[in-house]
Length: 430
Image (cartoon, rainbow, N blue to C red; front, side, top):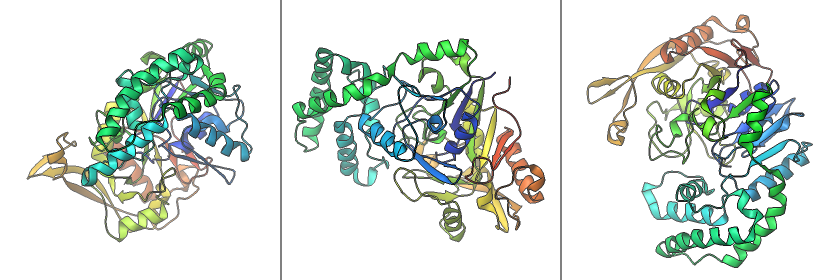
């Protein structure tokens, strides 16, 4: 059976949580491969709402192994806060169903401090970070000074890592007008959390390799969206990790050959949180209506999302870069009742037509979307579980999206409930 990678194909918030939960029932392992606790997933199961930000979505399913891979940056305090919150909702989490790669980098309080200090200093040039320390932790990873999970097991190693880390951060803090880090306090916090965290640590690359050889199904779960990718997103208004499907391999320790099917999650319209270009953004009543009907507020931050029409140019671009085999189209029901719908089919910049979003920020700022109009539908699509239950205009809208993005719809979601899903192609099939 094929292993499946799930990635967001827009700016995040596409509804990955529900789709991953739906697929996780058929998987043996659900592995997060990048991002941190800035990415929120909301699951609705039997009327019960679970809000996750760091744990893989499959953690709420009994009998599944949830894995946090080395491509993730891990805030251990946030992790155990989330574990306690889920425990209060009846979800049992232990070393039996959760594993963390021993080479996973840690987010420390000093990373959150730096995140906020920089944003405050940037003024109008801020990039809209969540302030959770994700970016600074990735910087330290690349700078070879981050503390990793395995380092907590040895005091001498930890002290050496702290020497290098604090030499860097104290200099930065001084330049930003902040006080030096209290090393004794930080060391105490790390030594206190170590006995709780280390039992979950394992050579994830090895365990997953063995499970793959044993024929187990692995579901790789990405965070954020492709348009926030550090290389291919709307830079610098991006996240600090690779959000494309290829990261599933390096973010868990399995090779690219482990990836069988790439499923791109795509919302039936477009949203974005924070700063940055957004060609199809609507600042009118239609945009407000999309936000209200779609409950467009961030799971983690609570920030209101910017809303706009479906941008086929961007989705075609991200599907190509991530090698998407099929998309899961979500929130179709939010479009119920619109008399007319618009799809962006191209851009115009200074009189020149583009069929992709240029990399240069100056060009992105001058993008004018080219729209194609389609008839909307007055009937409800909410809760539909077959094509026969969808209005003809809704089916036409979905088919036109497939043509424009050059990628088929594999799944169609018509409400937050996991069973309100139309399966077209089984991603786990060979």
